[in-house]
Amino acid sequence: MSTVVCVGSYDPLTYGHLDVISRAAHIFERVIVAVAKNSQKNYLFTAAKREEFITQATADLPNVQAVTWEGLACDLATRYGAVALVKGIRNSKDTDSEMTQAFANRQLSGIDTILIPTSPENALISSSVVKEIAAYGGDVSGFVPPEVAQALQQAFTATSEDNIAPDHSLNPEA
Image 1: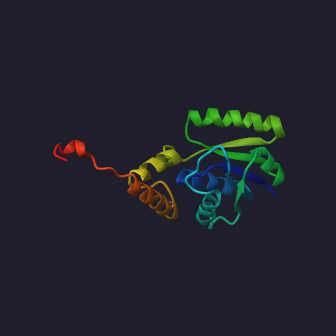
Image 2: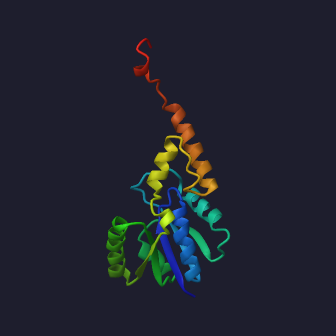
Image 3: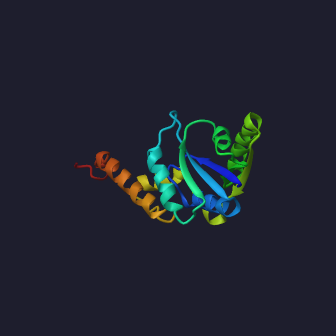
């Protein structure tokens, strides 16, 4: 059975991520989607919530399994007997970054990395941009699954209500 591992933070899960996961699921017999858990990073959503989003969004792909992982991607690949790691790329910056990781993973464990370019309609989507749009109350429904869009709205509505300060510069009498 050919198993691959897709590792990412998925904070939040986007349609770009799902594009790569879905395409990998059509090529390989089993896809393990590993939600990275790194104590050095600040995430908007917990690892458990990010894993739940992936499980919901890939429910129609029976060969996809979401797990949470803290550690080296190549170690997880070895644990699952994966033939490769799969990473999505949007542009040359992603390619440079992923190639560096691919070389390290190959050196550490002999595992290869397969880079899958995201579809053109998803090439400009990033989790960082999605979070910024959501933080300012923008509509992110074209970038993320409905459950994620709702969770983003809830997360940022709660924090923005606490941080609103009146802008007195528009009314000199205030």
